[in-house]
Image (tube, rainbow, N blue to C red):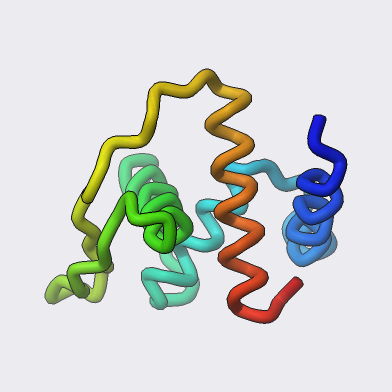
Length: 112
């Protein structure tokens, strides 16, 4: 386990857990997606929630060159272009990359 990564990840979780309860990578990506969509509280279907998580993934991986922001559609939803495939990773490696990207996202916003 990468202790520095887990220390920084704890800072991210501390931003949300008081208000939202126990969080994991997917729930943080959902909140990032909601922020990126920029519409505040929305009643969402299960499929739309998955789309919101995908927006969160695209937003945090954009600085790494995996996605490029294309703009927003007529409904205000952000769209991204996939620039390169993510390498084949097991679930622990995926979580590690996403945690690093999420930490960087919040660090760049000055929140941690």
